[in-house]
Amino acid sequence: MQNWKTAAPGTQDVTILLFPRFSNHCLANAVEPLRAANEILRREAYRWRFVTLDGGEVMSSSGLPVLPHGRLRDAPSGAFLFVLSSYDAPRHATAATARALTAAARRFAVMVGFDTGAWLMAHAGLLDGRAATIHWDELTAFSEAFPHLDTRAERYVIDGNRMTCGGAMTAFDFALELIRQSHGAALKLEVSAFFLHQTREAPQARLTREATSPLVERCLALMSANLEAPLPIETLAARCQTSQRTLARAFRAELGAPPATVYKRLRLAAARRHAQQSTWTIAEIALRCGYANAAAMTRAFTAEYDAPPSAFRAKR
Image (cartoon, rainbow, N blue to C red):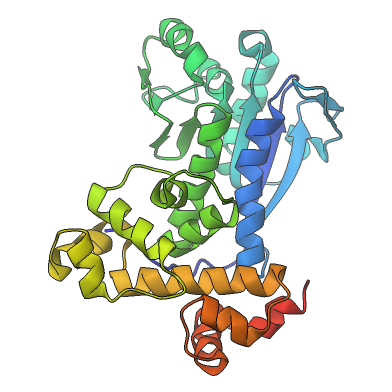
């Protein structure tokens, strides 16, 4: 069963190793969810730095230059080392790169290969005996170059303290999973919602970002569409053509919380966004999020976020 909320203490340090012609789309999708998690938690849950092998400026595939904080060998130990290469991975797979990554593996708790980063990790022997994936365009070549690995055509693969992720779009999903592992499904759900915009895409697909059961997907969609006038759980179950007991069992298994708890978090997350981004009064926000009055919403909001809505509004 998933954990709904986890109080992960302290700050997790992330070092991001960039190679020439890295994808800045992939980089943004890996880092922006961590930034959003910090903003939602109102503390530095994640801290990151950018490095290269030689400490010099590196250019993305689209021509965006990045001046790193320094060299990989000088970076302190941390929770994660993100290895981000995109194009020309076989050319970057030199003896010097392998030595640098092997040395770094002794200092970082977890190593993650983004885009084609798995190629460099595999070349260094850091994926031996592990399952791994890579950008779909390199999947065949990767499996042929490293036939002893368990290569999988998946969005991302987590095998102990070695993790690998495909292209830029999957980087976002992977970052959400890291957030879920440390802080629970509630924060993952809210970080995902943080990046939503109004489209015709089904709400549940945008909220979960991954396949869930049709039952949970359908219920999340109904919740998202009915924040201002919340539906009773009995009504949600009826519209999903199931019983309340079956619905509760599915939510606990997939999200780690009953439907009422998830529904409440979705409403309060919307209230937090409105407090930060809109000019509506607290009373109007309360009505738009399904609360009869500002006092009721403020009590629930403070219990959830350890601060009233006004504290978030003051930061605008």
